[in-house]
Image 1 (cartoon, rainbow, N blue to C red):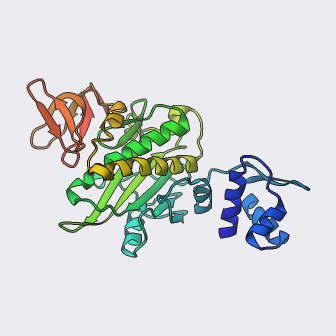
Image 2 (image 1 turned 135 degrees about the vertical axis):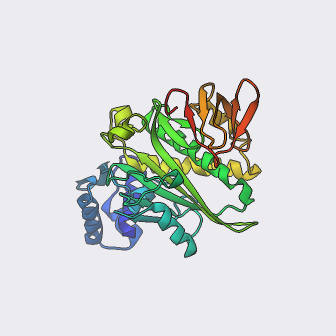
Length: 328
């Protein structure tokens, strides 16, 4: 498995050029037959590899797979994705990541599954996770920060996912505060962050990310607010590209957050793509619902809402926010 993965990375790093069989033999200290078998395994997995005598092998195309070999071959990160735990099907990537955290797996461990059978959203809601249609992944982190500052990491993750989706698709992805990713006003991604902590330190945090990629439709009760990249962009995307781009941006924004343990260095970027900003919103507080205009976030990640009588700060753990006339 390791040699197959490394051959795939070498082929990718050649930027469409040929890699000689002898070069691969020398690198791995194996026979041409062993290299040929590894190339055959990649072809069986759906990779289009051209073999030309006296020139070598060239990668022509890749299947839409999100297994460890594919993600490793695309990664350009320092620590995010350092270990990849891939499953064809799992109950919940967050649950699996928490198990790995208890087993001592390092920060940066990524759990990825082609399907979830018991995916979860905020407040215990289910998350539709059909096989092959989406990205279901969880990143394990172990920040040395005050536990009271941990909730802001959800917004850091939202910013990373939005930037990654925009980079890969070319479409403007926005954030519905605090952490839903939307395109054309419809939700295409949810993020669920869960923490294990004592009073004064954090054991670990798992950041679960579910992205609707290839879904062609949704149940009627969801279709007014939910969508997918395929529906909104009218084309299919390589899921692994979105995963590695998300990890790249998360490393960048997370490092910025750790410098101050707040969002002071990220507020401008976040507010720039905040779909609620300047719009009327309903704050669904069970004690006291109210309406106003969303003005942006504070450095603590709170939503600033102008009620025309006063400015109020809304914390993400307490309430939900909707648009006056719909989801956004």
